[in-house]
Structure formats: structure tokens, C-alpha cells
Length: 204
Image (cartoon, rainbow, N blue to C red; front, side, top):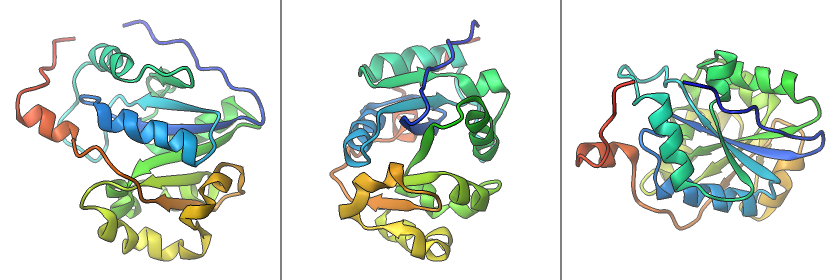
């Protein structure tokens, strides 16, 4: 499968990064992306379609299928779908971020995640390095607010948290800085879509 082109960014731009397997992508992903652009005052958001999630034992659908599906779900002039993790050969977020910072000096990256990921963030490889080197925007998901706010990572990084009303400052703040925003969510997940047979992986 040919790789996507390398995304473009200029020094000084504020780029949000939404990583995941997108297996499959859905309106919930699109919804939090639009909210992140607005609430965190981002110039652009890149969807990083991952070769695979190291915390999951089963592999995702083929990359070409997931890339095509993400581009049909997320059609926005300030959002770019990319397979740059596959191009760089990275699977762990910290390594991906190091690679992006080396390739795009002067660009301010903000890692975007759902509240469910914050709840398990301390299980991620080099999660403290991530916290110390990029800003993090956390977007609420149904049923995950309390677990995320009481998580080990949230407790350890409590002094670096910006209030919801300060969310527009996040991307321009020096790390460590993170912000948890409450917002109406689309109650749908990739797991649910697969369970009801709404997504059939094709052979590579």
C-alpha cells in the first residue's frame, strides 16, 4: 500500500494529534475533532491512523481500509488523515511524538485523547515523558468522567491542569499542561460497531 503524503506544518502552528486504530472510524471521532479545533484554539488536527495499538492483542483491519474509511468520515479543511506512524515505523505514542518534534521543529503539538484514555494513561509507555513534552487535551466521553478525573495520571499532574474556561490557552502553553473539557458527546464506539457487524475487515 502506498503511503500517504507527509503532512505540512509551519513553525508556530498549533497542531492537535488524534491517534488511534480507527477500527472503524465514526462520528464520535469527528465530533471530538471539531470540538478540539474550537475549544483548544488549534490551527489543524491530524488523525494518526496507527499500525496497531500495543495495548490490544488483536490487530486492526488493513491500513488501506481504515485510511479510506477515515477520509469518508472526517471531511474538514483543517483536518488531515495520515499514516505517518507507519511511515516512521513507530507504534508507541512517545516515540511518535519524538519523531514528529524532530521532523517539525517549532510546531506546537497537542495530544488529544478521550477521557477513557486518561483513565489508563499511566499504563502507556513513557507516559510521564509525554506529559512533560506536549500539551494534552482531554475530551469527555459518556461514563468515563469520574474514572478519568480520579486516575493516577490526573492526580500526579493536577498542578498542570488548566480549567475548562482556560481551554483556549492550552496549545500555546509550555508543557506540562493539560485540560479536561466537558461537552456533549456522541455515544458510539468502534467496539460497538464491530460487535453489531457494522465493520468487516477486508484482506490486505
